[in-house]
Image (tube, rainbow, N blue to C red; front, side, top):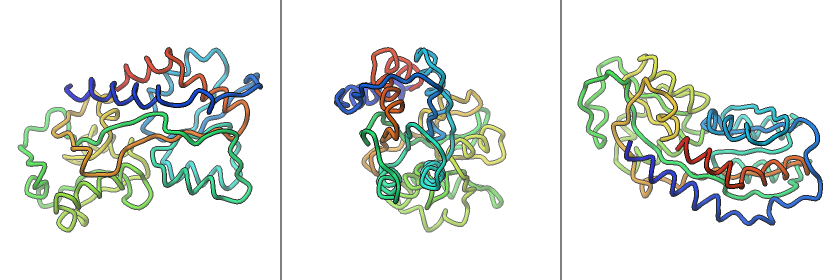
Amino acid sequence: MRVLPLLCRLLLVTALAVPQAAWATDDAATGPVTIFAAASLRGALDAAVEGHGGAVRISYGGSGAMARQIAAGAPADAVILANEDWMDWLAEQPGIRLASGPVDLLANRLVLIAPLEETRTVDPGDILSALGDDDRIAMGQRDAVPAGRYARQWLEATDQWQGLQDRLAETDDVRAALLLVSRRQVPLGIVYATDALADRQVRVLHEVPPSLHDPIRYPAAALTPAGAAFLRYLGSDAALETFASHG
């Protein structure tokens, strides 16, 4: 895929720019580290933690759901979200004190996808014309899931939102939108480029120009010293190579 080299460059440039002091801690992670992470990191983050050398528990979900669970008292050592607004919201909640961060750790791109064997022609500037009478396009929830917000921004920028807003199959996280396309329950979907790389049953029809939506960044923050140590590991060369290999 043409998107992979660019994603790798974005990833490495963004992550290597993270000040190492932001992850500094005098405490080593001695027990299981609990991480709350955006669903779109599933697979890439799983692979990255294999080289960590310690026990790591990861809970995946929509960024809004992850932020709300932590604010409600769910125990976590660190959190990696797919939207800066949700991280800002979490940092402002009563009782939340960050041990380090937030800093932008990773970056991503938005793509339009279809099932692998789907043959219909799709004009990314006129998606509605490619949908049948009962077809819908999958994406994250427009108001709660970051991928859904970015998708809406793109559709608004291309004057397609009014025609498509009633033809959406909205999901609680972006991986659920990916699954709808992969299982051919819908003919089209809008997900992250890394999601498309993770599923061999879909293909990319269009890479959305980054200028048509807000920058897609993954802010990370530690809630405990153990979480700070883990996030410092994610800034290591070994972890960065693993993330790059997953797009």
